[in-house]
Image (cartoon, rainbow, N blue to C red; front, side):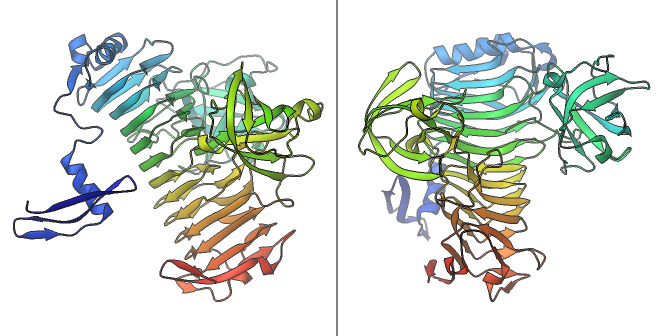
Length: 604
């Protein structure tokens, strides 16, 4: 090599020119990152000085039957306790049964540095409702090349064989290969806490509104049970079609229990790559309070290929909360989960007391809590009642703890209301709320993903080069989860389902009046098949292809400013895009600006 000029540009590597033999190369940032990756070992690769510990050395069998849990944990302890860097090695093609657990986890990495869990394509087969992995208080940890499944499964499935609207019940026959749940013979016993809900469907991936279950009883006939829904179940027996409607439901004690299968908490630099998840008892990934980069590459959750399974997990796949670092995904596939595929948020706290104009006591409102605040953190402050209002932003100058409460001094005396003065009645709307913008996952990136499910973005996030078949919510829940969404970008993606900007569907408050809290939301170069609704929002639509019936419109309330540039339908430019907009309450057509885009810039 004759010439090599490398320099750093905002933390990235770039190059001017290098020559190799008779070939010369000129490259920018993207090309040089590829060059750098070839020169250095990746997060899952073996390093020259890496100490390897095989689970085989600790007598793990990998036959899918023997309990390998003790052997795997002994090998992991040797990795954590010995010289670093070090790697725990599984054997390719083997299935490791884990029937015993440490504090309900198959694996725990606590306060460790510079270690890898290298699966090499092996499978962990776990006993529900136990969990897979917790990584906490650690740094430079990689988890690579593992498949996860559960046996017995945390769910079962079958087909509806009869319905009885008169008695409010229906019967299903459990499919061969799935366990038949034990059921009460009593017709009055209420077991809704055991069963929670089931999901009906007529074809794969197309689940209908859930059935909230009051009780399950034995029924006559082979492999049959009778289900009584709750009185307010979204789907009633009369909505089910015998021999056409199928149902997946909880196995008691196994499903809708156990919390998150993977927990990544309070870490610096965690890399997760090449993970396949075919079943989890409840939630999948909890990613919270991390301080350094967390990245997911090529991660899947789906029903196990080659089986007739309809589902993989009961609740959220990626539940991301209160991180002081952007979280990144590059390549993922999600299918068969019944809550959010992605839920990125930060927790609001209540201003419980205000002894001085610049001194506030902040109190957690939910069981998840909020991150420990630090001097210099930026805060967003809102009021919910009597009107929805952004009070402003400020910075913490000092902080101390009184139990779970944070006592902070701020740079600016905002007009906050103390909860002790206003929380006598509606605790969901009283007092001012504070969210920490420096612990709100800001700058997160989701790209190259195929998602069958819902996405809920409250944090500053980019969704790019992805396919989303499900609900997209760019929203906050002012009483609990925020921040008010700002600077969210959706680009180069295919969107089908529903798009909603504004108040979260889980909150009583709507944003059809008051301040426009969702600001600078950008949709650029997407194919949009979704119904599009927005309230209390300012957003831009640039270069999108609208795949709609002509009578469908963007449904807007209390929105503006709105910038529209080069919308197309069936490959043709929409000449007057304002005609495709339904203008609702508290806004006018004057708040819609049509634009052309030249050289990547908006021209007004």
